[in-house]
Image (tube, rainbow, N blue to C red; front, side, top):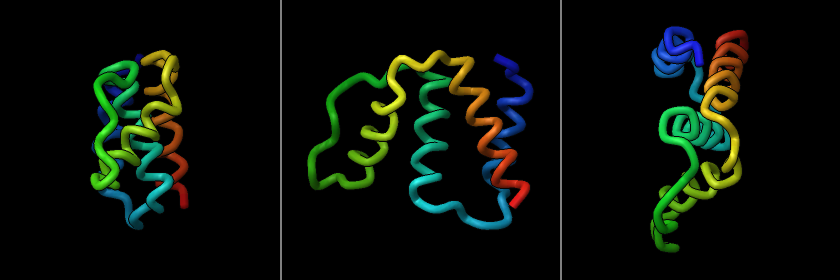
Length: 84
């Protein structure tokens, strides 16, 4: 993983000119977590924690993706958001 490029993308994601849609935000979250922590672990949040459950589900969808692949997808996604 290119740690410097990933760290730059993380910083850039916080200064986007427009707030991404919830779907894109969930994808950014999942890719970030996969790149930094690996596969999802622990129990899924309860049904009343809608935000937590959505984040858990998004992260679960990319289970098995390598840290490097997740980091590169995160970088690419942030770059595409900056271009818009």
